[in-house]
Image (cartoon, rainbow, N blue to C red; front, top):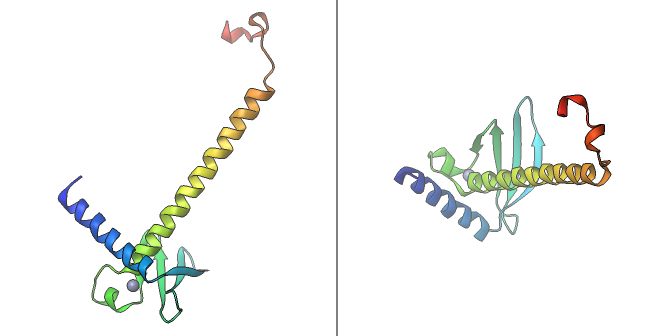
Length: 121
Ligand SMILES: [Zn+2]
């Protein structure tokens, strides 16, 4: 890992920690035209509301920090939210595969050597 990558991760973690400290959470996901998706983010007492728009892997935020090209906690939060969902989807896919494999093992008929298709002999 390069020093630049470590710096990025540290920045991301610090921003994410701030978002959690403020109690930010996703309150709505709005599908927009084409590939665009908007995430409505609200802090703990609902006094702050931000819209983070995703186009592909790019996130943009409507907050002041983003206006000044600063990496904001809202983007960090949504990035983490998306990573968690991706992990969950991957785990679900793995579980389906495991279940299928188990089903195949459970239901497989024992094949006698002399019954195996010719190609396997
Ligand atoms: Zn922001």
